[in-house]
Structures are given as structure tokens and as C-alpha cells.
Amino acid sequence: AEVVYQVFVDRFANGDLSNDLKNVPDWQTDQLKTGQAYDLYKWRHGGDLQGVISRLGYIKDLGATAIWLSPIMYNSGGEYDGYSTTDMTKVDPNFGNDLLFRRLVSEAHKIGLRVILDVVINHAKADGFKYANTPTIDEATSCTLDAEDAYWNHTIDKSEGGWSSGNRSELQFEDSKLPHYLRSPDFFARCGAKDYFRPLGIRANSLDPNNNTAFEAYNLWPEWFLAEMIEFNTMHRGFQELYTNLLLYWIAYADIDGFRLDAAAHVSADFTAYISVHSRYYAKQLGKDNFYLIGEVLLPQAFRYLYVGNIPQSQISAKCAAHAMCKMLEGDCCPTE
Image (cartoon, rainbow, N blue to C red; front, side, top):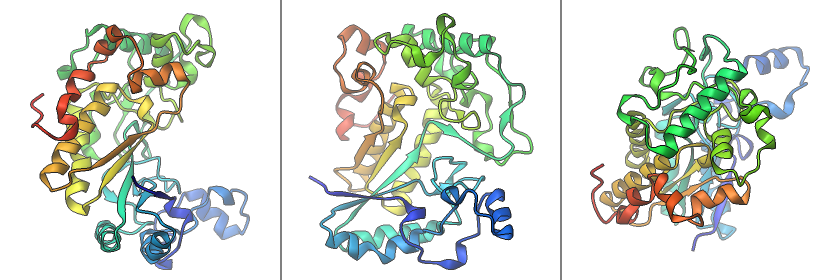
């Protein structure tokens, strides 16, 4: 058993004043100049990895055995919470740098603390990255339902960018801060914002959660949080491999002990299975026999059944996840698919 202490990095401890303004939103810079802190609650407050290092002993003395860090990867908009990740290959400069993160994990291990990193796997957000044309309600609804039909009925070609739909919209990559490794249209769902999804002509938030397909379509395919958080096409095999490899890098580089998968209910079940299989297998090769994984599923009970196994067997097989996990879930064999 583990006693996990959650650390929201920006609001925890400021250990290095020199990096406080390295990556803050433009509007925060303007408010600092004028002294009018209208949005103080949304400011970056200066918490960083050095601050976490300075409080490791305090956390240990509380009886914790592990710490869960909020997302720390670079986000081009400078948002304090970390859930608007732009680039998974580097630590946000307001929090520190890659070497400091590795040192944090090392110092935690010295006193018997494991480190779990919160990672964003549902979407990307970057300055200048947006839809070339805003989808209409009809386009968003048709695109989303096409995707759901392909997902449940196995008509998707994962090697060729996912499902076929003439309603998928174009994205604008040029002049954006999105890293080049993500600049493939096939890596994104491109169905539009959740507010544009109207199955049967009604607003999606009025759907019966027991209607698995329509309710899942609402939660899985549109931009569910903010329209600027562009949804990944997590059914795409190439994307699954690329993004999982980014996660594996941090296991090797920083020696972390687990991931908390943000918004796991809003990505396809085969992607969470893929991450689970490959990260646990990879970690085991590095001597980590108990690599920790947990996914966020904050949805009504009927939908949660899809993720905890309490659903008719016929529907489980349609998810393409159960057989993929097999005993590789415990790292006992090498993934071949």
C-alpha cells in the first residue's frame, strides 16, 4: 500500500525566484505592469521543482510514501496548472528544467519516496494552433458519430489515420508553437468542440449515460474541455506509439515510478491499454517491478463500467482492449502488437 501526497507544483513551494516569470501568460505580464490583479487566482504563483525538493523531508514526515506531481511539461500559453501541455519532451521553464526534475526524483528516492507524474494524454494546446475553419454543429455531430461507429464496429483502419469522414475539419499548424513531431492531421480527431455535438438534435449533456455509444461519443471525440485544447486521435496506431515512447523516455531519463493519466475517460480504451502494457513492460526491463498507473475517470457509473470491467462480455470485446492487456499488464511478456 502507498500513501500518496499530491503536489500541485505551482501552488506548493517557490524554491527559485529567478524562474518565476520565465513562462507566464501575456495577460499576467500586463496585470503585473499595471498592478491590477483582476485574475490573480489564475496567475502563476512561482511554485517549482526546487520548491518541491526543499519540502521532500516535510512530505516524508507526514507519513507519505509517494508524491504525485501535477503536470510539469512545457505549455506555450504559460498556464499555471500544467494541463495545457504543448511539448512532452521538456520541462516547463517556470518549473525548472529536465536535470532538476531528475534530481528531484533522485532525492525523493533517497528518503524512500516514489514519484508519480501526472501526464496529459487527451489533447494538445499551443499558441497559434487552431482550426482553419470552425466546424458547424452538423459537421461536428457527423464526424463524432462516424468515429464512434468505426470504434465500436471495428471498421477503423488504425494504420491509415483512423476513420473515414468527410466532416473532419482542417487544422492550422503553421506559425504555431506545436512541436513538429505532432504536426500530423491524422494525430487529431478534428471533430470540433463538445458544444457542437448534438446527437438526435439535442445537447449532448442531456444524453442518457446508459446509452453507451452516444454518451461515449460525447466524452471521447469532441474537444471536451476547451476548444483550444485540440483532441488527439488516440485510435491512430502511429500516434499511440509516438506518444507512449515520449512517456517511456521520462521513465528512463528521470527514473519515475508511475503515471497518473489525466482525462483517461476521454481517450480510447485501446490507447490506455497500450500505455499500460508498454510502460509496465519497459519499466520492468529497468528493474521497476511495480510501476504504478492510474487513470482519471470522473463520469457517471454507467460509463465507468467500460473501464472497470462491469459490462457485458460482448461489449468488452468491441473495445479491443481486454485481449491486448493479457498478462503483459504485469510485464510478463514482450508486447508484439
